[in-house]
Image (cartoon, rainbow, N blue to C red):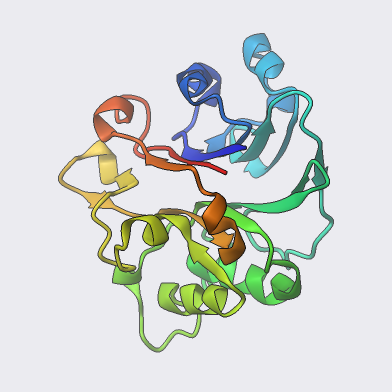
Length: 230
């Protein structure tokens, strides 16, 4: 099974065909429109099998699957955090789609939103694949925060969940050699803020891991896709 995450930087209705080259079974897309509220018929036809959430119909988080793949959305407590979609795939395994957001208050922004979600659902996550745009990296750690990036990575590791990118490359958190995001689409402002985390028992089944080339993607988004084949 092939999984993909990509922050499309809006207007997925005009960009989804660019993803056809990957032939992904499951796609987690940030900053996309709600297909149920969109008038573009081609986009609506493409997005027949999906879940979506967001603050407005034009910019949210979506999970899109090929026809025939069974998606079941878990009714897990999110405590008002933004934005997470827990989905059961083919009654076989769970993914948590992520677009870490500012949240509704000044505290617990971005990685703090995921930290809060993790505390609420920790007992459910040990066998999950957690995939998406976390808007976070160790380089922005504030040491006094118990919910900074390093704290989250450590707590995930404690339940057997690690970043596939870091396991495959050997790069350390905060010292990634391959960026996933280019601020203002500028090659001189690269950051690694998108991740696919998985339980360690899945790592022997990783057949391929791919991070998109910015030369191919910066024309349509400030992020590049991450793709894993299990």
